[in-house]
Image 1 (spheres, helix red, strand yellow):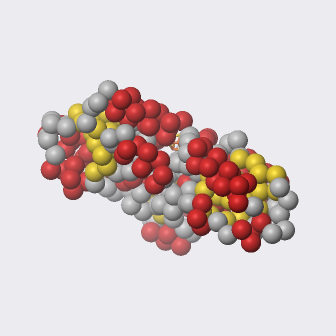
Image 2 (cartoon, helix red, strand yellow):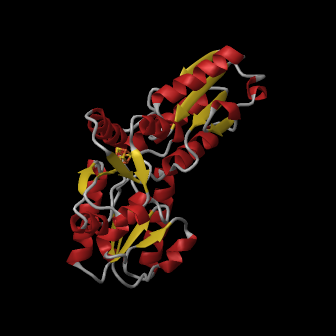
Image 3 (cartoon, protein in one colour):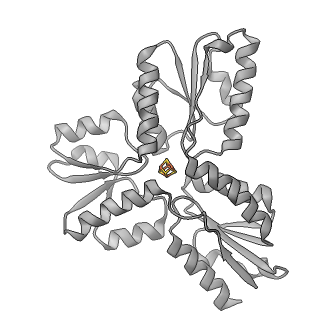
Length: 287
Ligand code: SF4
């Protein structure tokens, strides 16, 4: 049986950069804390923790003083920087440049006109979304479905942005409906739509559709808590109904391959390549 690993799957440059920054400091023997999981993948987190990385949550961060803390690719709201300054915490900022640009654009749009409703299409409570909402003093409205559009006042100015890792198709559907409703209220000129989905995600989305159609069975490898993992798995499922989401090799059921001539292995922007290779070898060795 042919087993192929998707060449477009694996860490995006934002995650590579954050891991690289962490490893360089850990290799120098620096005691490094990371605010939240550096990457939404337990296997990669275990590897980094073995090298000395310590993951902390916000309640611990607020109590700490005189330590070094890494900010992951998702970015942080302004409050995090203020706490660090107050507590003499050295921040190693690995916010992805794409997220940083989006934070700045949202801040600028909000500050230019405080009447504008900033809409963020994303997952409520996700670290990147919290960082984006923080640019608007907490006033941005987070939406995740067409139903959530009811939270918007269509007679006032609206600027809509997307979390960088959301599905381009879903965002397009939301934006189309929002345009329709603003037009119905005769206020279409008050609407600004910003396509802020990361290119690393939108390119993968297209390539993943082709990859999923090419194989009899798709094994999608990702941490269960990864937003990007959920979005990309939906892409696989829509292109190939024999798609399975796994985080570990022990979740694989060999009956999935009974009629398969080819298996495609792919994953999220937080899935390490070494893990996809391990899964491929596990399938090869146990078939
Ligand atoms: S998905 Fe894009 S925006 Fe998000 S961390 Fe990766 S490169 Fe940066």
